[in-house]
Length: 210
Image (cartoon, rainbow, N blue to C red; front, top):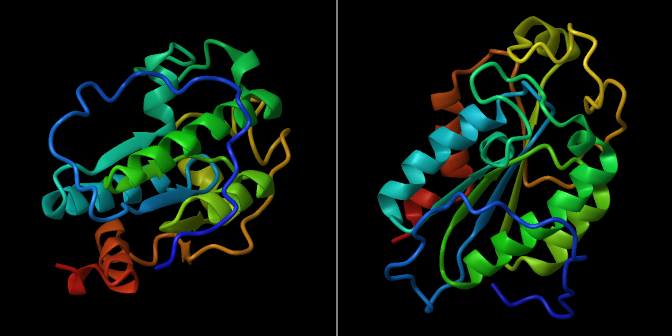
């Protein structure tokens, strides 16, 4: 795949929290890594599916990296990792979410340029952010985990949809539904997460890679 021309720097906003620990070790400079972006509304299943995908990917590429939105927010104290309660509502506004998305994906690009495969699970449902990803990340795969509203309200593990919480994407915050994703997954329970990962593995030709 040819390197895309005309790459632009991401707008400088918030910083990505330091949660990776030691990212040293041998990385390949002979190949550019791939960024796998699992996006979808809260409760859609992106963390579950993305986490399983990452676990499988790491077996073939030990230097693969997982960046999860909930993990990063918990690391900086935005919400309680035990109960899921929001502790800093001001960091969940549309402006704050977008401010965090730019450095996140710029970081993903840098990791990929070092030869690392990156799995990122985050809502980040903004068309300008996804457009920047497509234009600036050489090997970019976007996986939209889509579910019905009935499924979201039924799952509602964090009580975001039933508690009257503020700054919830899809409830009182707008979002741009992905229109150019590499893969769209309808995750209403028709398949298990493991079966979905099997399909993604085939779709991205990972069985064929050495």
